[in-house]
Image: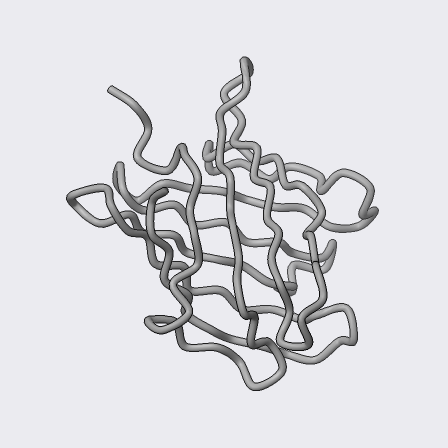
Length: 136
């Protein structure tokens, strides 16, 4: 059986609830699983200003263990799966304080995904939003 998260997801702007400082016009997430069982997530999109943006690729495994965040010393992440359609990832500092996180839920029919995420952006502004995604 294929993992319900694997695939290409297109942002559904109309169904999303954005933070005031983060209102993209478009977005794409590609989720794959590598040979070691890690998710590899690549995200890109178009900002509110019409600029192309891309997030740093993320690699994580939902084993419930703490792992270092590559290239970001002092940060660790933990990924867990509450069930086959729910994936949660949180990043924390060495002191245990949370930097950010996301809960991804794929619908029972596998056609849509909702992501609730929170954290701090590159300008250290706190954000919280819910985005809706359609499987391509």
